[in-house]
Image (cartoon, rainbow, N blue to C red):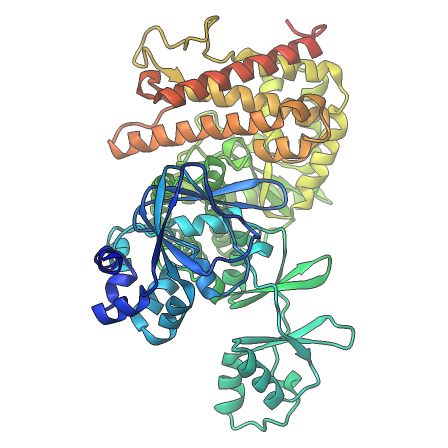
Length: 632
């Protein structure tokens, strides 16, 4: 009876729906059913790999992965979803922790017969290859494509997991002095598509792949007794174990390599391959990156840029963290800006002097979501002569105008306050920028404070980045321990009070078009950003993103040390509320703004929002106490 019930259930979900009754019956012979009460751990990351693949019949589970510093949410899975499917590809340890969110019932199917299907059933093999690391969002992969999903739940892992956790750890290596035939025999014996070759000191010196054997040996009629080093490729492109998978993938895309060596302290720790990633070509954010890299004109970039906003909605549907969303969008937008700058250089020729293109505001903090105003500037090296100065001014004037128009075509409107490189004031040599900051810090007028705070979040996107590093070193040395100037910054950090009343009731707009709504940006995000920026300036921290600043300050600042986790959660929560609200506005064709009706929040969201605003108020009180002689 159980077998028939399981077959009927599996007929409705992929990849089992591709199987005939006879195959299904054989697959589920010996199937068992297990009940997991709410809160039960079905498996622990690093624990023994279960012999079974779990198919959720009823209920819901939460999947998370712990890296060196935190536990990262990966996925929620419900009816018809699988647990432990990554182990189909091998491994003897569970790769994630799975906890039952509700009372959950699972069918337990032995792993081995499903693994066998990978080799005998093309439909099953294709499903797992295209869906690897993905949440099973619909009945077939074709339907997923038809829904134009750009970013699936599994890709989420690529942006939250260090590459060392995904890369194959048991790397097969051999001496670079063996023959081609011996190398092929090793690859055949271990069923691997690539072989790492090492030198006499044990360091990786080369790599050969199936493609090398095909293209360099078989097709050329080469002697298999030759040293394998004659056909190996030198793996110049490498990644550190702590890099996010997304960063590693970008390297693979940029350098057109299919295997990436994963290093730790200069030693080989693993290898990452296309097979590990199983990216869905044409539907991944990486396809947008590749499309950006492949264009040579501004007009060709326009249709690519229009696809970027689509990713946000899909990430929201998948439950991605707000910081993950902004990080992905920032990376893609950076690529777009760099490509426009490259096109500008091709048009105007080589710059007469080194320069650095910088961004600030939400883009500088890597917190950009939907396309916002252009906030950029240009630093160029100090000219050696008046003639060089004249050439630089003229070149960068035309150059910045071209870039501004290119960004405008790609959906980034000009900054209303004219904080752009087209404004001559924000297109200056390094010594002038140093003079700006010297004046702002020594004479902190309201305008000076506004300008300095704006540019404290600057970040290099393209060009000679050392110019910005030199400027940052100069600025941080001036600001650090400068109590008077920091007092002005502290005043800004307490200026915007969170929208919470004495009895923990929401304080909403009293009139106007946003009556009865909260301003999430001015009353929620801005105070958090200002608070963390103040503490970063106190300690001379160079990071610009709010989250990176908090993490860096965790062991360096007494207030952050006490409230780091709470501040991180608060920032994530408000940022996510803002993104969700703006996405709903976008879907309805409304103008995007930062106002939200608190009555539209769930009871849980209301409670968290109140706790978040109370936390901001508490930290602002600590700032007032810290700077009491300078707060007014």
